[in-house]
Length: 127
Image 1: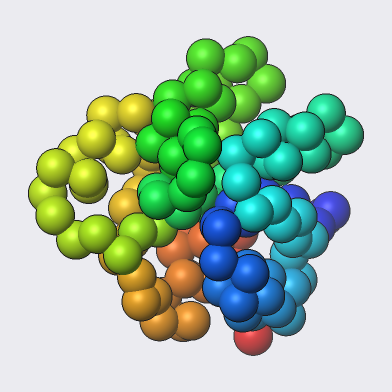
Image 2: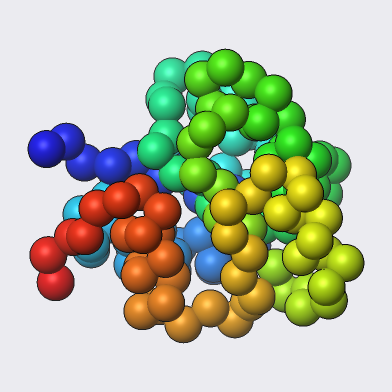
């Protein structure tokens, strides 16, 4: 079985590092981008099994990026997890309406993030 690839997009470098390290320890290959345009550029060379997108980013936000991913043949069914410090129902609904499979509010507990990632990629990794 090949390693599942995750594209993690967040404008907060410390979160990219923390989440990236956590997921790598679970056996995932993690690609990181600090904005939507860099993420789209990375996707020329990779086909992630999961997208983890921050909602609030400069330029194209995570909801807009999710909506864009849903229009592409290569990514229209790829699972998308949205992360946001915003806990309001409007942001959550907008994320799900854009095509996200899951919305988690930050701060996210490491165990919950890993568990949800495993659910979305349909693979339980050894602990």
